[in-house]
Image (cartoon, rainbow, N blue to C red; front, side, top):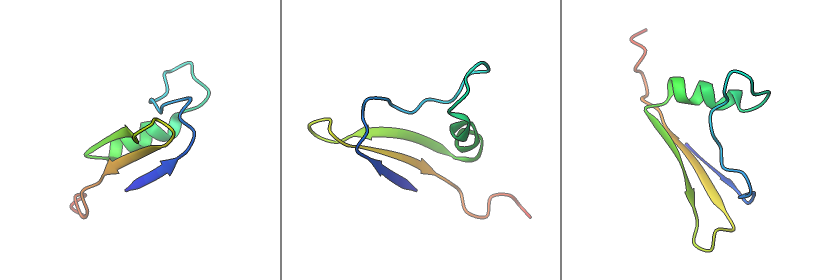
Length: 59
C-alpha cells in the first residue's frame, strides 16, 4: 500500500507513550511486514508505503 503526500515538513514516525498523535503508525508497524517513507526528487513530495502479507493470520 502506498500513500502520496505533498506535506514534507514532517516525516511520519510512530508515536511515543507521551505523544498525542501518530498512533496510526503503531498499528501499521504492528501489522505490516515493513513500512517506510520515500522522498521524491526535489523533496517536494513523499510516499509513505507499507507491505502486508495477505492471508497471514492463519484464520
